[in-house]
Amino acid sequence: VQLQAFGGGLVQAGGSLRLSCVVSGGRKIAIAWFRQPPGGEREFVAAHRWREYYSDSVKGRFTISRDNAKNTVYLQMNSLKPEDTAVYYCAAADGVIVSTIAKASAYDLWGQGTKVTVSS
Image (cartoon, rainbow, N blue to C red; front, side, top):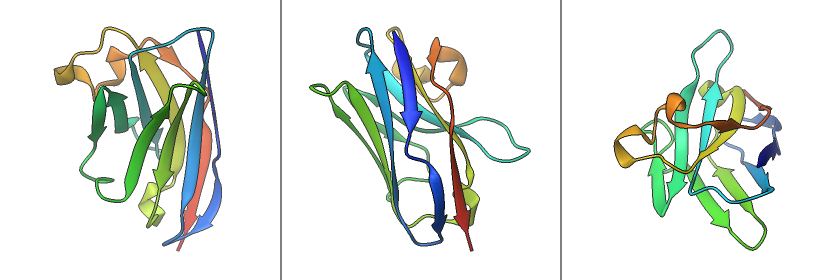
């Protein structure tokens, strides 16, 4: 199974972007988005595992959705802020439990990152 993330780019504050994560070669139960800001640690953004999970920093602005027919998970990002600037990664796993859904160590498959830059 492989993951491929794309859709990043440069956007002004208040704008929107939609990231896509294509899952090829199989299916995974849990798909998540993490991000790593410049000089910062990788942090949880959102996940889809039978339902949606969000970090507090993006709740109400970002939406994760899954299209099983296209084997793709989307991250719709609205009302973007400069602090959303980061490299965004999608990750996948089968054995993720709810208590670890936001932990990077729970995911065993990662895609390449896609860079999102939000200008002020």
